[in-house]
Amino acid sequence: MQLNKAELEALERKYRLNLINSISGVKPANLIGTKSAAGQENLAIFSSVVHLGSNPAELGFVLRPQSEPPRDTYANILSSGYYTINHISASFIQKAHYTSAKLERGESEFERMKLESEYLSDFFAPFVKASAVKLGMKHQESILLPNGCTFVMGSVELLHAAEASINDLGQLDLADYQGVGIGGLNTYYGLQKLDSFPYVREDEIPDFQA
Amino acid sequence: MQLNKAELEALERKYRLNLINSISGVKPANLIGTKSAAGQENLAIFSSVVHLGSNPAELGFVLRPQSEPPRDTYANILSSGYYTINHISASFIQKAHYTSAKLERGESEFERMKLESEYLSDFFAPFVKASAVKLGMKHQESILLPNGCTFVMGSVELLHAAEASINDLGQLDLADYQGVGIGGLNTYYGLQKLDSFPYVREDEIPDFQA
Image 1 (spheres, each protein chain N blue to C red):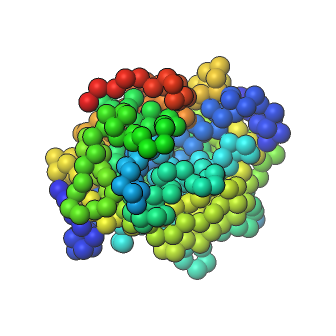
Image 2 (tube, each protein chain N blue to C red; image 1 turned 135 degrees about the horizontal axis):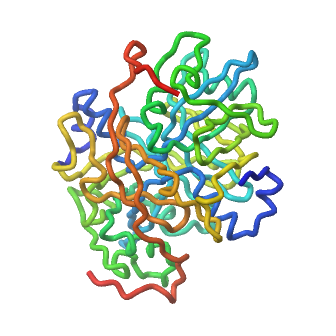
Image 3 (spheres, rainbow over the protein chains, first blue to last red; image 1 turned 90 degrees about the vertical axis):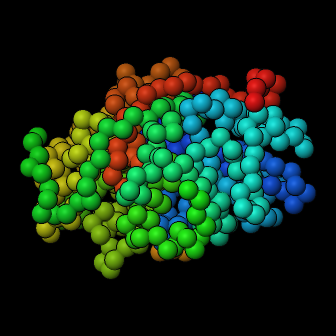
């Protein structure tokens, strides 16, 4: 299948939505936890978390164009300055997926989806107890993108991870805790380690065959 | 393991680099192809491609802080306005990984890594022939982030994908062409489809158990 820009625009809306959402490849599966000033917890699935830097440790994520007022996750990030990023494992992909539901005002996804919240140290925002990797994030800056999306940047203030999943080099084994990836809007993939290669030096490139 | 910000900063440099590069979860594995005004082809692996919108179809990616002059990929994007994004399959993860090598001036990663280039329609930038999904991208805008990284945004001008990997709903099966994900700096994961869930409506949420 080969489509140019005009042909992409002419596709049926849902078909295009599914197709274009899957063409960036596999996406990380994370739950973002927040809390309002009034103490209301919120949890939402995001597949757009991206690495920005390791010293200091910084991550970004993309928010779809926000309504006015913004939806709970972003409203809570703006009011409190804090949020959590929690990895999704295969055992709770369905619960995680359904956090995208629009609930009644005042209802928490933690409760409705039976995903227990947890507080670590004195961090303001709630973590997902079942997650093997939990990050306490401080909001740094938001950039409004030309298409109306918002790129939200934050620094890692707290890192909690299962010791057994990290090797002596600091490498996290995503398969060890049944970490998952997302394809498109609603397909979940398990991960199976294939191989690991060294940091590349010019004089150590193998002789490749066509 | 639980670390606060000061403890993260005190980690040994390589350990922190490995750890923090892996805490965003699984990352998409893509090769970005470009060509200079003089006709020199370039190919580089990126794990930071992110979905921005489906109508029009737009993707972003994060570039590490650039030297002056910028490295080949970004220099070519700036001079030509075009680039390609090509999915990596399990059969060529090693070749793809080694595109991160710093080669002699004038040497192409397509040739050195024996990854054949391909031109589709009259698109300026080269595609990776072996990739099951190939995207012709037009540079739209770059945003310099506070930490020195650059967020590069582009629109999808051409989409080429294996027909057999796309179902009637427009969903791309990432496992069908042995698509892969990246963990940290150098670990590659195969994908295995676990499940797919419908678009969420409030009145269709299952009764979850704790």
